[in-house]
Structures are given as C-alpha cells and as structure tokens.
Length: 423
Image (tube, rainbow, N blue to C red; front, side, top):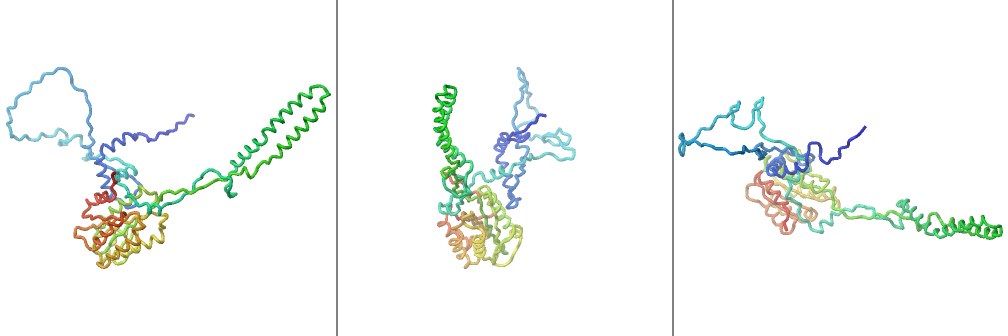
C-alpha cells in the first residue's frame, strides 16, 4: 500500500511567499492593530500571536478586465437641466436594503466590515519591535555576564579512564600492529610460497624445506609477540570550555503605589512593562519578572497585586531600590543573569530621600545592570526625584529616563529608548 509523506515547509492552503507579501502591503494597518493589542495583554503573555483586523475597503485590489474594443460612436446630449452651482440630489440605492454601499445585506442584518486574520507569535514580535534593539553595553559589563559551556574538542593521548575513547583506541592499535608486522607478513607469505614449490621438487631439497619452515615459525612468533593494545594506542576524549553569551535575564518592575498613583497611571506603567518584557524575550531565552511595589515600604508581590492594589500615605522610593539590591544578591548571581530594571512613578518622593535613591543607583545597582529605565508619568512639573536622576545620565550609559504624559506617549517613548543606532 503506497504511503505519501508531506514534507512541505508550508501547511495546506498556505503560501509563505504570498503571506509575506500581504504583510508588507498592509504593514501600516497591521502595526496599528499590533500596537493596540499590547494594551490588552498580560506582561508575560507572549505564547500566542494576534488577530489583526483590516477594513475591507483597504484590501480592494485593482483588477484587469476585457475592454469592449472595436470602433464606437457616442452622442453626448447637452445639459439642459442644471447650471453651475446647482446641487444634485443623492441617488437612491438600488439594493433591497435601501443602502448605497457595495455588497448585499446578510439575513441577520449584519454585514462584513473587516477582514480578520491571524499572525504568528514571531510575526507579532517582528512587527512590534521592527526598528528597536538593546542599547550598546560596555565591554567590562559583557565580560561579567559571560557563561562557559563544555564542548568536544577532538582527542588527546592522556586523560582519565572515564574519558577513554574505545573505538579510537582500537583504531590506533590496529594501525600500529599493521605497521609493525607488515614486512614480516610479506616475508612469511614469500617463504610459504617457496615451501610449496620445494615440496613438489626432488627429495634432495628436504634440508632447504626444514630451514624455510623454521624461518616461518620465527616470523610467526615475532608477529604474535606484538601486543594487541599498548599505552601508545590509548586515546581520550578532549573537552574544552568556550564562552557563550548569557541566555537568561531578569526584569525588575518597580512602581509607586502610594495614594498619588491612580489606576490610570498604573495602566500606563503596565503598558510600558509589557513592551519591555516582550522586547527582552526577543533577545533572551529565559526572562523572569520580579514585581516590587512600594509606598513608604517596599514589597515583592505578584502581577495582580502589583497593578491593582491601592495604598495610601507617602512615598519612599529608596525602599524599593534596597529590596531590588537584596533580591539580586540572594537569587540572581551576576555571572549567570542579565539584569534589567524599569521604574515607574509619578515623581512624588520625600525630598530628603531622592539623594539617597541616586546614591543607591550609583553604587549598588547601575554598575551591575545591563539597562535601567526610569519613566515619570505626570503632566506636572518635575520634582526632586527627577532632578536627582538627571545627574546620573552623564556618568552611566546604561541609564535612561523619560517623561510620559498620556497613553499616546508610551510607544514613542519606548522606541526612543531602544531605537537602533545608525552609523
């Protein structure tokens, strides 16, 4: 019974070439839909693609059709009903529904207004972060996060018994024994041929026959005396460590939850965190998220409590920075993890605490972070925390700060933080 195996890269009724052409043609509409989808997602939800809607009017394509052809004569009557400036009434629709649009009304009274299709996870992220990249890092920071992985690197003549390469050792043994006994075997074959020739001749050559037999026995003894395996034959598997870039990162989300932070401000911060998490998953295989909320005290919480719990009272930002430093020391060794921080606030902080925040970032966090971004969500004038953080920018290339006034500023600010550097 014949069997057919489908090894095509594209699934049934799918064409990768046509799909990519479609994505390029309606790139603007798709990017707009993808940007809107960010607001509906959880921070760690990157396992699925997205449904993208495009209005039908935007996917109409020009078509070629057969012309009437031939010679024709037309008579155009003059206009005897209207003069310049007259207004013409809108013609009534010819469909049964009384509308003037294209197409027919459905039985339930609903029409098809948009074309919806599914884009994959990779296509979703490619469109979202098309022109973005992680900022350049200093070389000493890259060395601190280097990981080492063991690789096979041929064979060596010395090593431990557990690493012995049996097949390779037997090959070396066979090659040695062949080289050491090749001449003796060739000479022994010649003597055996001479002995066969003598046996068929006169009895007077019996003495010569005895001598040849003795030489053959001596050669056979020498061949058998060659050891089957020798220490010279042993080969051991060789391993070496090669540096590889770290493939895991931790993202710290710090946010003020004091009374001055309303839910609308938290929603803006959430959208920024979603973008940062999705962006990091494009670079690292494993990304962990740590949520730290703070008012006068800091606490590590889950995502639900991070965004939707409300506290009252004042704000001490340094408590969150201290907790972040403690968590790094306990759970995320610098040699194994790439550390990213994102802090969202409305700018409120006790005046005498802002200099302490700058000192904590300078001495305990920024030297070990790959990147630290501070976004201030406010329409008011900046306060002491913003002015203290401004002093960090000249000395640290891995620190950035931006002001977000409304939802519309989130994606432009994010793109400005991570835009690709041109030559």
